Image (cartoon, rainbow, N blue to C red; front, side, top):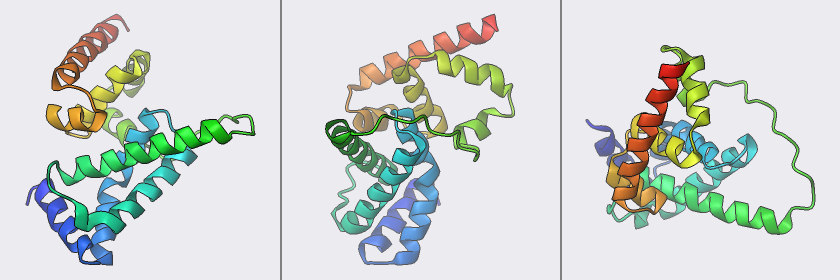
Length: 179
């Protein structure tokens, strides 16, 4: 069964209150959603809290999933919206200086994917990309989302997604050729 079919089955079960299905859905999407939120500027703690909040909303509103997008895109959209809400709240209520977050000792999904192929060089080149380019590449190649899903998730036209991916690949290839 394809991942989208499995996700659809799980969300149907979650909508009827199946806790085991929710656990499975959570485990399937935690790592990718966490990396997606980190890529949008969340520190480790904020990303983790936002994933928890997003997945709680998935639990509460699974019966409202309309199927206009994939379950994965729906979950990531909820996560993105929760992150935006938290970032807005934090900028209004921030009374403490931001302390740099300690490096997360656990390997993230992106690091595991590129580790087999000269991770250091690839990572250095990815880090040189603008966040919009880096996020577009990650969503397309690491999260396996199509242009329409990325467009919906990022709330930008499909043409912009294609342009970002095109330029990001050119910049990445150029960087790798120089290092």
